[in-house]
Amino acid sequence: MKPDSRLARKLEEKEFVITAEWLPHATTDGAAIEVCARAMAKGPTAVNVADNHYGVALSSLAASVTLLRAGVEPIYQVVTRDRNRIALQSDLMGAALLGIRNVLCLSGYHQTLIGSPDAANVYDIDSVQLVAAVTSMNREGHLLDGTRIEGGFSMLVGAVANPYLKPLELNLIRLTKKVNAGAAFIQTQAVFDVEAFQEWLEAVRKEGLDGRTAILAGVLPLAGAAEAEKLCTRTDVNIPQALVGRIKSAGNPDAQKREGLAVCAEIVKKIKGMKGLRGIHILSGGNEALVPGLLSKAGL
Image (tube, rainbow, N blue to C red; front, top):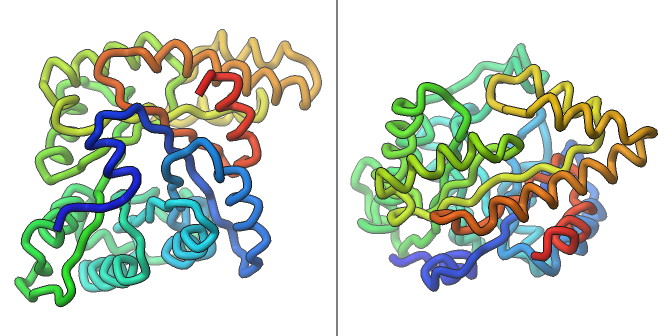
């Protein structure tokens, strides 16, 4: 079945789209969802709902359904770290039954990186295989073992990419696998080094991948110099030292936060006109209330 969501329609119509994210935490309080819904009510086409991103949190499935009921279109995020193929397919059918029409497929950070070192991982399949499974459920209407899905199944499937992983040739091979598996959109890790991102995007265009999937550039409004310095220690993030110094020199924490937002808005303005880019994905980092201000500053 053809995916039918607002995000799917906008991508099909070649519109420039805005997506954002919400990071649930350990809560059963619906007030947190109400805050997110108010922040995301205008602007983003759809909102990622993270799947135990920083440790055990409210389930992405439950949070996605609650966000949907609040009038915000969710992108149900699923990591293969915690579930085998049986549970993954079962949850996907449950999500479809409950009205969810978008899914983002990831392998997920290793459990030792999210404060749960005693937990066992699963990784029965990886993110590429999960994208292929969802694509098969859409196109063929059956599960991995051939069982027919009664009532049909329709879900727009996406994946992620890191434009800074080297070597570039292997980076593109990984991206190509996800596109070949059926990823209709790709959300990237946060862009800080604009020149390096442009180099990656041009390579993506050279391979013709931009015509087969929608590339959405991730942007992150840094909360301050401390967050920037912490991200500098990660291998999946590329932050120029000049940018870190700029935020640090802004002064007190509130001033640094404003500067981080200003920097993010400037990055959006620099990249949004790049050929091959189909949208912006706002990585709120848990600060969903910043999204409206960023959209305004960036002219979105």
